[in-house]
Amino acid sequence: DNFALLIQALSRGLLCIFNLHAFFHLATILESKFSSPSSTKKCTIGGYFLLITASQFHLPYYSSRMLPNTFALVLVTHAYAYWIDSKPRTTLVLLVACATIFRCDIIILLATVGVTMLLRSEVTLPQAIRIGVVTGFVSLVVTVPFDSLLWGEGRLMWPEGEVLLFNTVENKSGDYGVSPWYWYFVKALPKGMLFTIGLVPFAFWRLPEYIAASGKNYGKAYFDADCLPFLTPVVGFIALYSILPHKEIRFIFVAFPILNFVAARGLMRLHESAMVLFNPAHVDSTISKKDDDYETETTKNNTIKKKMFASKWVTILLFLGGVGSVMASAVGSSIFIAISKKNYPGGDALQLLRKELEESSPSVSSQERGVLEIYVDVAAAMTGISLFGQRALIQSCRDIGGDKSAQGLSSKRMCKVTKDGYEHENAFDLNENRFHYLLSEQPAVNGYNVVMAANGFPSLDLRSLRIVTKDSIYVLQQTD
Image (cartoon, rainbow, N blue to C red; front, side, top):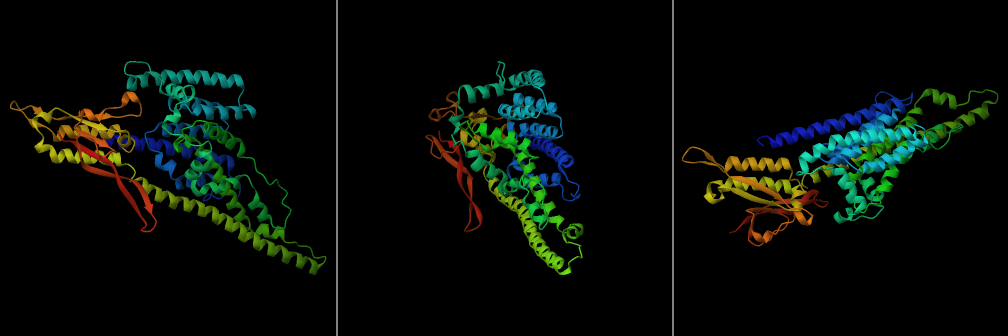
């Protein structure tokens, strides 16, 4: 408890390193499989993948968050890398383990990826079944005892199994909010990818290459399907997940590595098409060298030069537009970060309470030297109050609330934090006045006075170009 916040910072830093390693692993594989001979060391598909990912808001911002989605992202990103590297069995092992231990909804991704592998003859059905059974069993042996020890309260517990039952058989996910079926495609994906979503079509459409060919016979198909086997199961995963009524963008984090890979392929195509027009060999091969009819060839070459001039500027503008989409996404992400920093009033309220306890410590009555009851409602718990923060507060109570008895022993005040919940069994009646302090979104509670308030609900005021907030979570003290 003495180092709760330090442990939290170190734990989040370690999780962030795991995610970075997964992103770099995928970037390395993309480099080896999809880079063309014309790619330069400074501009490669792996580099563009990392640049696009870094320019977005959600994956970098959540890469250290202690959420099952973030842990799942590590394994799924590695799974994608092994799949692209022609190691489908390793991919299946990671997806099965991830679905069993971290996020049961990965079963949907496992189904779409598995079907794709079967159709492409990457694995056989008996192999897939054997991998699923063995990996699933081993994962259960690992996760059930561990989670039962932490959360089971004396019973065997498989958290992801209970979540699967809750979402499918009981169909209760809608209790936490309902969104329309198209929400992921219309709102979540544009919000997650920002402007880089515009690069995705160029991974398949050879328009820049066609323009760069100018007067020559292009001679290639206009559609490039190289990325399609990897994108299709991801789109299928999102479509199937859309059936569930409750939707959050974090539920589809595992789709973004492939989407960013496809966007990087599109940006790489724009880059290569723009650079080919600066290659003297391309100019020489395009302009005719025949001397049979000088005037005819001169006229033809002048026409080709005009087309090449127009093609050069069109392809350069397309490439600059692609780079601009990455830069615009980075700017947008910076704004989101500035706003999101002020979106955790629960954690701020916990710090305000700690300050209140420090200031009121000398005047605390001897009757309050026992257990100090602190209530946290759902809104406060969801906006920054972690178990690490609770442990730090409890330690502060011990440090600032103690005195010395006549025998020289320390008589310290203890804090007990009680969290409310959506579930009926986790709800509390505040009219009983059993709590000394409340952290609540409700400013008016019988028997309590507001002593402090933490600001939240941030928004960007375009007129003044500043972030505005309002009172969101209140610190209330018992009046009796």
